Length: 105
Image 1 (cartoon, rainbow, N blue to C red):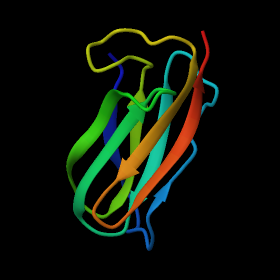
Image 2: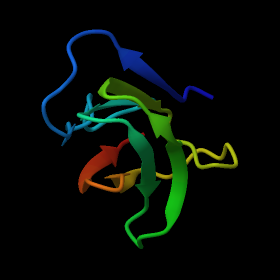
Image 3: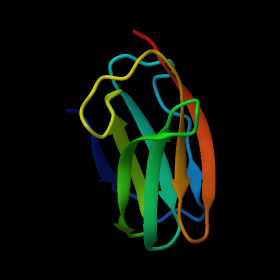
Image 4: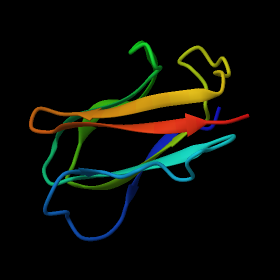
């Protein structure tokens, strides 16, 4: 499975941000970039159109910085998901936002 979260070296961001995934639409994988302005627990979760959780990409304490998460279009059990729209949500104690993406086969 191609799923990872890597820190991107550089300056400490001054704000929280969740970027649009790239590429979008995607097949077979996509990257999701986000920035943290302070250290705290972060959850990055992918949901289907019904609002059901399909994949947890990150659920851990993270330091301030820039990160990229890779998602391969699979659920938490490793099953390939169907083509369609999905949502990804970045949650922390001080920041929450959601974006959409499109998986095409």
